[in-house]
Image 1 (cartoon, rainbow, N blue to C red):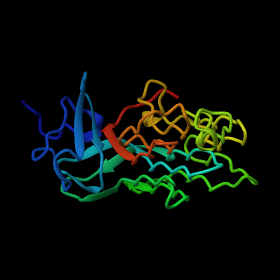
Image 2 (image 1 turned 180 degrees about the vertical axis):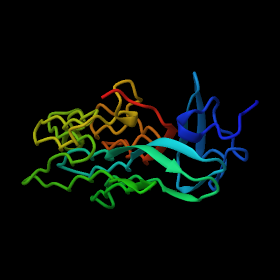
Image 3 (image 1 turned 90 degrees about the vertical axis):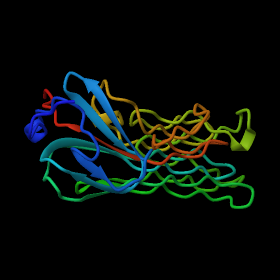
Image 4 (image 1 turned 180 degrees about the horizontal axis):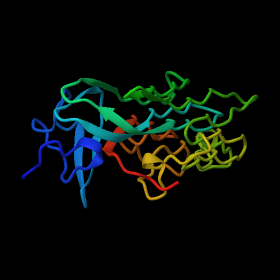
Length: 243
């Protein structure tokens, strides 16, 4: 692959960056992904915490998702997803180390520990995305709502297939969780799609019975028998976006 010197300056990249040639990453293999989207467009996904060191000057956009919050065990709604943040035109200097922290997922409650925990905060390039909230443990009275997050957790649904463990559908794309027996959690009110763009990949869905499996590095909230997910950091060659 032939590359022109300084191709990453000012968002003029013509090929996806190569580790050891264009950047270094302190994390192990499998903790990052380089995606060549064609047409001179690329992304790097950081799936765990580490240090990113560009070997050339770069101007990038960054998208951050916090870790998803967990669902407590009984009489409560789902966990809130991680919040999302997009920053644009981030100037990165060659041979400078930039720490990246990927927020860890919270934990669901269980028979031994009925209480959930919040998701961790994701940070990179002076930007942060908070983790989603874990839902509070409920009782026969009071029953507890879904938790807040990038998208809200679904409310408790006592008529659901799992009875007091069931939750209504969690919110998606920054929306509130669905209300059933109790209210859904509040979402951030803005899209949780990658880079805040309508055609971006969807992240950060609130916990609810619409989630059937944990999606790694999605920032999704926790639901019955579905653990919340870690967050993520994604960077790309800077793009000018129409207002």
